[in-house]
Image (cartoon, rainbow, N blue to C red; front, side):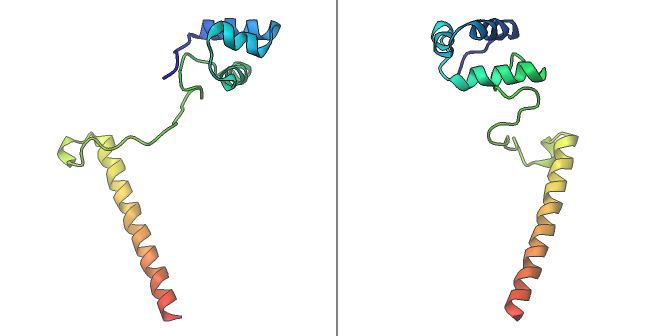
Length: 108
């Protein structure tokens, strides 16, 4: 896992980068990947620069989705239960659609 940079530090690093070479900046601050600097610069221009370590600004959803802690409805929050029920409904619709498609193929 990489270092967590404060917004102020990111701005100082970007200021240094604006006056110096990329390689110098990476070495001086111990940043391993040049894309980090490019991302911060883009985020600064877009107004989304934050202390987040994900590098993708607010609302980042990088990585695998979180697994359900439990599929026991009695232990789920109301919000989790609603999502779970909607997911089941979507799966049932998908299954029905696939069965319909497969039965048409078998007839032809």
